[in-house]
Length: 116
Image (cartoon, rainbow, N blue to C red; front, side):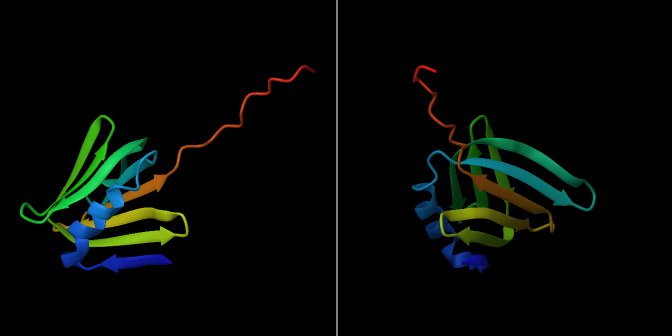
């Protein structure tokens, strides 16, 4: 599938549908701005949901212990793969880039219970 730009009219419906399928995902949020440089705001926290409110023009990325709000997004790009959404690139009205990367938690092998 690969990266693609979402049209503004579809943002609310896209994120409403997406949030139903995010259970168990973790997210990293990186903010990239000329004045700030690149900064990681969240480092692989459990993801609770993503929503867009067209009345307030706010994209909300809800993580365990952190609500990341992007005021007045200008562009949203999604990178989708066979397993679903890999990342989002959100560019706000000031040109600040917010990169949200998603991943499923690492599944560890079951402990060995047999006698050696």
